[in-house]
Image (cartoon, rainbow, N blue to C red; front, side, top):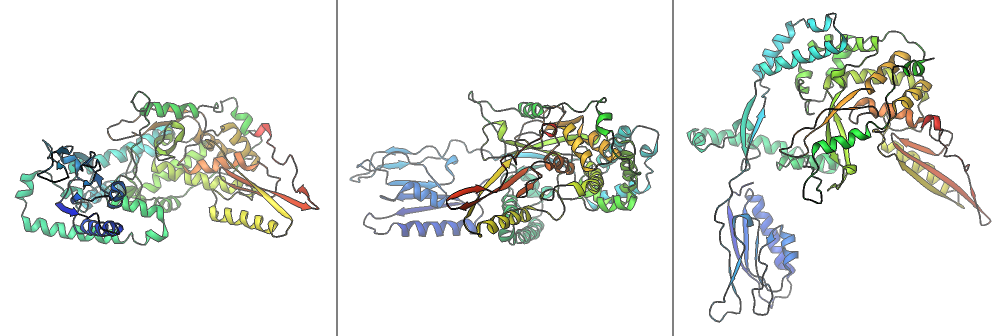
Length: 568
């Protein structure tokens, strides 16, 4: 970001001064005050600091010390230049002392050419009220013949999505604006202008009035985040990054020894290899899996239930490519609910999840600050918003069928269960045993590696059948998992998306059914041991010991942790 002004200070700190911490405290308060009063000022602090620790001083002031050669006849660096605008100047040079001085002259020349500010062209579609009304008039009278025809379910969903998106492109035309790094954060995109002639032509009073209003709205929005500082540190951190104009998702670059970076196709190939570790159920295996499953009545999702679910769509989530933004899906929920309920009911009737809803864009999230390999990356799948609505109904029906068979010590993925309940239950059992006296415990914790990515669909289906899943619902869940397609989002600015790939195992993280499908995989693990505590893919257990006459007696069976090979 460009600087709004230049602040230059000349400093002399005598060698006879006793407390050097006073200098640092004074400079730190002054610099903070200037940064609060001016927007991103260019600061230069130059002078004779004598024996002040330069690295400590630069760290306290969040400035860079650029003099790297001795400036005194004793061979010490006493004359410093602390700044945050070193890119606009050349490397300092040392000249001979002036007259009888024992300090060299430090020459700090301006750079030959000042780097131009970075300008980025951003494309967007403005959701203005007039366009929203125009789209609403169209969708209110459109009969959606694509949904009620004799076509296949996949074709119906594809045409339904295409007609909604085609009209979205028509009524909300794409616009382009240029963003400069010197742009004020409170100026909304359509009002930003980097062309000096256009800025000059705009009446100054009118521009100042608009800027004052925008700045007031921006600062009032900024103050609304104050409560997050104490209630939710994660949201507070995200809000601060948005206010300062920094990206929430940093670029991911994994360097190689030859200086190159891991490409998006290499990351996609890495996860594709994991997602094909187990074969998906074949058509010959399906009758064996679904055999002896209890039949169920026809599942009917009415229009009003679909409408209420659409109204709960989160509008602040990013939109899936080639789909209506979540805000518009919620806006036009009364008109989308009927055709969508017809498609969802057809899914339950024939046991097929549409292929267009099984395509996912994978966003890579680093597990550590600077990942060194693909193993330190976590894939989060972004699926169509309408697919998530359909998943909601599948999840409700499935949970109603298996609720009574879910492990009572499972505290994840279920209603009214969270990490707080999980930790309190475990801590309560631990303290009750220790407080008896002459006893101690061992605490075991297991975290499954690539838990969601390595779900075997056959094992998950067999365990769901044992837990009471009905035939039609289990068929639909199996079809939801099989033949999924995915591609990885660009890892950094200027990168491209990867190619489409398929998977034969695993459940995509970020979908609502992923956690529910994993529950049966871990459901029967140490199910007969009382002191077990599960939170989706995290498993903890307490091993109790009793000490009597110096003899330690375990209060558990030696083979309590056994896994049946048929359920692995």
